[in-house]
Image (cartoon, helix red, strand yellow):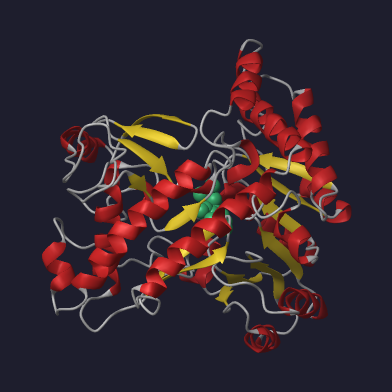
Length: 442
Ligand SMILES: Cc1ncc(COP(=O)(O)O)c(C=O)c1O
């Protein structure tokens, strides 16, 4: 029997999403994909069994437009680290709202937030703000190209939607070949592959950019090795800490792993859901931003800066990133045990840092990866747990929340195990079309 279902409109059974579905139809008529963000669109959410529109959120929860309450494991694609509507952040924003939002001159908050970042992040000596992570990574690469006088970039992982980054994926429509040819991908945790790549174009690489960690932990010496190789070849080392920043530790992954890059990019958790990103790094490099063009109308927008100030002050005064790691670790251990006890460890596991664990799903003889993922999403959604395949932990995930998630997995993983016993068993249990696999960047 199903345990207490946190969905508000039913006590058991399959939720339906009539309002979401109707809104999706309307949105699709005027908004391509029906969403501004790929990862919040029907490319990631199986149609018929998923909520598509949110009404409101609070702490660890959100409510969809059909009145279902979900425990939020996605947290706005990892930008909510404190929980939705953190009272101190909300108050800081309200106070600033009373004084204006976007002005005709810079505001002192810009300096205040820059100083907080400089105090927390090892590589940070100067800071410039943007709105999205893409702004910061774009600025980093332009600056690296300017400072080195070189064009090529070595890339590992996802860094946003700009040409040099997404041009390396199968989604490279609209990106000139001449730009794509300047971006070279390299695999994580493989120093010889990077060495070979850099040596193939001596003196031509402006930057080596990577997330210091995403799915896999860096092997001992790996990040140090990347740094040494980049510098040996005259390239700058850029850490993309859009997700890891203010999540893995107060100083980001660079503080956790003790490797200080030349430049680093922050976003997501910097302002707990308000749109703010930051490019930071060594003073002599950052000063040269004034020689290139990195500028935007909303770069000094003050609600996000007020939010960031509140977030950074909270992080500096309380062990929040430690709390995220501890909660995520407990969740990962309990869920992994359920999977292992069912003999599913080869098919379903979790990898990454405890504060940002990502599903790793392998094809099974009786079902493909996408079908398995779709079944897991369908069944977790019907139990009021929202994820798109990761555990993006927030400080609002208290013990009852973790227990609720574990309870849901303890019902869903046995269903998967049973479904995998027969060929086609997973497909038969789907009440929707399986998701179509898309381009991968991690
Ligand atoms: C590591 C990383 N870098 C950059 C970005 C781009 O950030 P944004 O979507 O805010 O432009 C993302 C977004 O998911 C990211 O995960």
